[in-house]
Length: 473
Image (cartoon, rainbow, N blue to C red):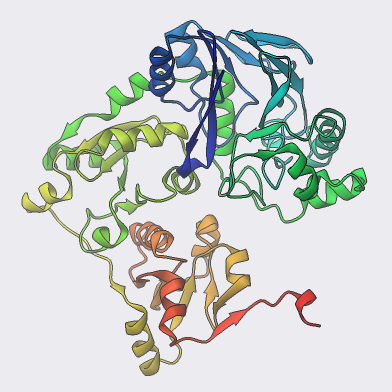
């Protein structure tokens, strides 16, 4: 028997490859399915099942392509009713994979079809739980996402179901079972996930606040719902793609990999209304870019920020990437449902510049430079685009918080006639913010290199820190 976690950091997502005696099952696969097929081929195994724990909101699953290419059966929980052929497994049903068994455990709460899969090894021992978004390490799935698709499913109703599922279905299981969740720290599907990606169920019973056996249902609801912020806007759109179906990843890649000359790129941008997305490093972008391009660097939390910043998943996109990374970028866009890349700039930005095309820049200064400016300009405006919780925790005294997550609201705070010095934590998000607003006509935004980390480490700024009341004794 083999269990392999395939973890994708930029989505904080865990897919799983399970193999026994020439048969395999894949749990919650990503959209690009070639790696799973290759693993099975190397093991001489046939992929028998694609096990989906629920209709995912934060990424488009690879179930359709994987089933089509391997003949595997797609399995969901009892209440799932997508527009394509599946096996809606009953609660407690046993699926055979080689010499092992997988027990279906219906655990509504995160969503109504949410299902965990309990692995029973060759000796009949319950050894692993593929818990999807029902149980994370340190947290549980947020119960406010399904209502974005079905308004009747309120967060209160779902939280109640989640309490019952955890108490009646999960907590009675043996302490030595290994928990394999669908997500880890950084995912928007929960709020308090650990950086660890597996743990024993017994340890989670001791340390996970949501598994506290003395907690009442009302206390559980209050704890689970407390502190939730609005999910990214693309979440319900991805849910619908996972329910209704989507184009094959092969079609998406073929459509996107059109190499365009600078002239052809300019024509496409003018004639289609496509969004120009530049995925280079933030500081490289600042030194020169195509006018109206926005920067979301590929070497960061790329897919979630694309989902947060581009509201229409059917938006046509033209790419500027580092040479050789075009397919990677198109694939990572498709993971979160952005299937309409229509081409990329052949030769990258260097080709655009060499062709004598118009170039724009963004001013980016160091923490020390900002300190010098403030000495001369005491009323300088510092804009902190980190999350509200980050700003609350610690911030430059006198700075304004304008979270990138809610850029349309944040934009309303800004006076176009005034200069703002914009920072995030390390420089990734601030360039997204500045480039997006520059494309909307805000020309007085200055990026701060290195973000809050650089500002704090410079020693030139007064920092306001939140002190937990429990320490003030």
